[in-house]
Amino acid sequence: MGQQRSPPIREGEQYDVRIESLGREGDGIAKVENFVVIVPNTKVGDNIKIRVTKVSRRVAFGEVIKGEAEETEEIEEMQIIDE
Image (tube, rainbow, N blue to C red; front, side, top):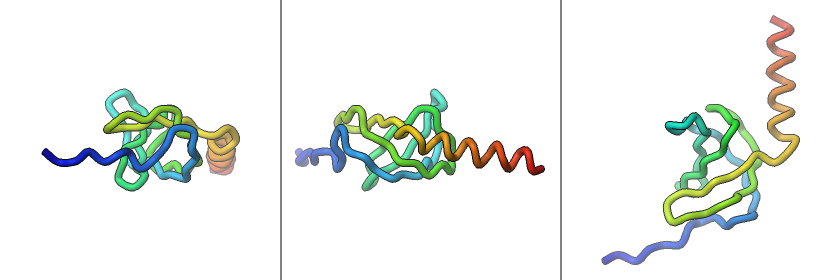
């Protein structure tokens, strides 16, 4: 049997990621060194900074670091108003 590699990320660490797709529950999915990270309250195309909250063998969970998502939402709101 093959050796199991430990996940390339650690709980509590911060990473800059891009949301590549959405999961079944609508949560954003990013990858760090090809390791899947699920990030709630995001959408495809978001470039955000996350903090990893939980790591399992196959997947990790992260949260948007406060301020990063708000900035993106403010920019989008300005673009909508300008249209």
